[in-house]
Amino acid sequence: MADCMLKMEHITQKFPGVLALDDVGFELERGEIHALVGENGAGKSTLMKVLTGVNRPNSGKIRFDGQEFGHFDIEQSKKLGINMIYQELNLIPKLKVYENIFLGKEIISKGKTDTREMCRRAENMIRSLGIEMDVREKVENLTMAYRQMVEIARALLDTPKILVMDEPTAPLTSEEVKILFRTIRVLKEQQVSIIYISHRMEEIFEVCDRCTVFRDGRFIRTMRVQDTNVDELIKLMVGRSIENQYPPRVTPDPQAAEMLKVSGITTDKINNVSFAVRSGEILGLGGLVGAGRTETLRALFGCDPCRGEILKKGKKITVRSPKDAINHGIVLVTEDRKGQGLLMNLSVSDNMILPILSQYCKGLFLRRKNIGKQVEENIERLKIKTPSSGQLVAYLSGGNQQKVIISRWLLAQADIILFDEPTRGIDVGAKYEIYSLMNELKTLGKSIIMVSSDMPELMGMSDRILVMSEGRITGELDNPEEFDQEIILKRASGVAV
Image 1 (spheres, rainbow, N blue to C red):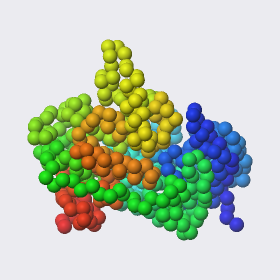
Image 2: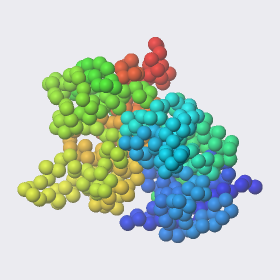
Image 3: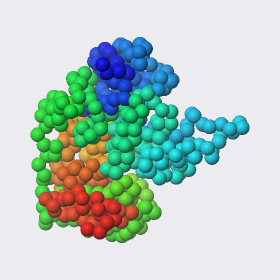
Image 4: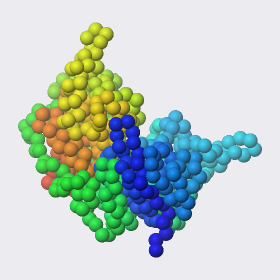
């Protein structure tokens, strides 16, 4: 008989206007890698917050390693050996890598913090994950992928009995994913139980033993991974079949005018980047993490000072700030929703109208009626799951938060939309909706520049792909029928093709 490490029974969790968990159960065996899947809003992250003591459930019980509890608090959960790596990273950007790893667990020697020893241990911890990193570097200077590695190292500082990973590979390259999987398998051999939350089906079948499906806050089914397939899982998750992962490709007009042309864009992270994108086209930027893709978008959006020339519809424009970019119809859908994309303590409606607030002002007053109509139309158009437009955006799932950001720029009537990892942490059903929206934007003549570390997504949605390496463009693929993953990876690694 399997050794049951964890059994959660009849867990119910309510929030204002939302029944997040409806009498659900979950079981985890010792030394098991168990996938927890479902659409955004299905209740996966909420259940894990109950497990880690962040949320106190309205009802239910938890049996952990033979002991029975009504609920956990955070301290109790940690003492029992339960650690979680959240989808939205919990790091302090202004602190250094080693300071984040040892936060609250500082090494004291002779009455002082032992910085040298903490750095030594942090370096060993990071190196064990298969990467090199300056542990004295501030986290704010790291890419999302390297921040994720810091989060993992911090969770592994105390060998956990249960490790929960919420979308751990979302910002990682394929090589970094392999490193993570090696680490996960080592932990499994050490009898650590791992709960693995992911929307990437191929990962579940590669690394997990069993899988539990949630839908709309309810438990649907638990099964061994070897006894199911991708189509069945997706059907259980969304309650319907999704025949194709991507909508039919909308071919751009080859005679369409150039919407944006950049020449010699240079910052401290990218060098002499030049390209053009036409009206109604999706231009994909491929490459490894740190190649300069996100930095290129940041330069176009005015986040970082840059040299070079930017032309929109043939006219030179100056972009020194995000405000300048927005005024020129250039907008950014950031990969960091909570840190850079949304104000979490404001409502769905307020987040949507932020960039165009002045349009709804009459003197000192807001024309709420006009706002409400447009906001409600966008909520319906993008299928945003929210009890009302007045709901705090913090209570929405990650996928619905991403849709709020996209809605904001639809209201702003932007011409050029920069997508940085547009479906990171978003479930298969919501992904398809966003892909369909991107195609709709193409038919409206919008230009899209998309950064994606998801290779199938990059090839499935782009009309052209530019490959970057070490801050430079190293290749271009201009025929979707001939997109080749091996060529892209070679170009991204600086290998001649």
